[in-house]
Length: 116
Length: 112
Image (tube, rainbow over all chains, first blue to last red; front, side):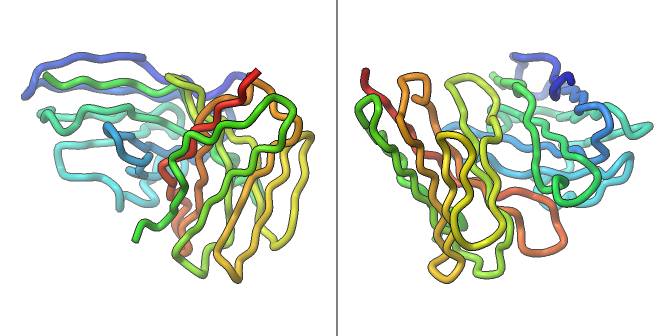
């Protein structure tokens, strides 16, 4: 079974530019999550999709961040315009739809974003 | 007070010893707890989940949960140099959200 994949692995952009991160969850996992880790901080939750619906957006920092999951398969996270404080590692995770394993989230390798 | 607290370490143990990693959490209503292992530059890897008070064993790993003390730990028996990594404690939010709240992680070094 293939794991969670993310693209790109690294992205370096200038302040004010736009970046789009992609995540492909484990096949059959309806739950998809975005997290990020900024330098020296803990991994922080951004949002949660169930299939194509946003279930919880409470961690999204501001309206410069837009997440989509059209068709309930892969997801994209767009940052527009990027600011210096957006630099960090963006992780995607997915979990099985049913209990009890819906609690168990499997993480992708992350996208390291550097905003100059 | 942080929601999930861990000692940043590093915790240094000799090969073959038991490594004990600890985590406390602030929300008494929390029900689901997870340990992730993260090698430098890699993704967090789920190694244990625990939902009930007591011990849960899986190979060389034992997770321990004490909800009254709001404390969860991870024991690694017969530690190997390959266990050297950062261990992240994560707690599921108490509301209907599925989000995980992470501690800052404890760095473990196993000396050959």
